Length: 97
Image (cartoon, rainbow, N blue to C red; front, side, top):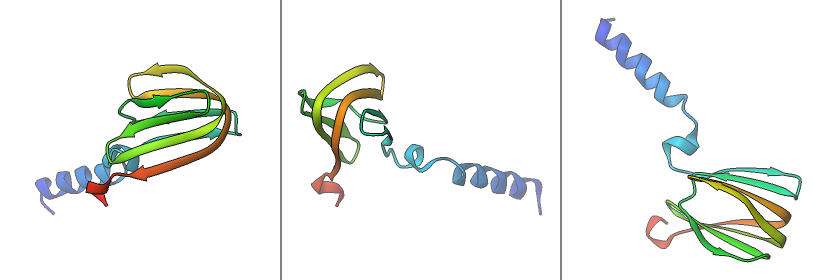
């Protein structure tokens, strides 16, 4: 195998090992019990109240419902929510269906 072929194989293997949330602009969601929620790769807050949070995503939106919801911090495309998390729902936008 040529040197260029080895480099190309190494590069494609490196790309294939990347997490899917990075490759496809998907959100990464971490839920701890029903009390804490961390979301990465969102595109902004569309709606917030103590019972509902809606986040914009590249290909739709994410709706979090619950009680006593509080946004603890927003750092770039990362967000932390605390409260009683009842439901997390992904809504794909019509143009990407």
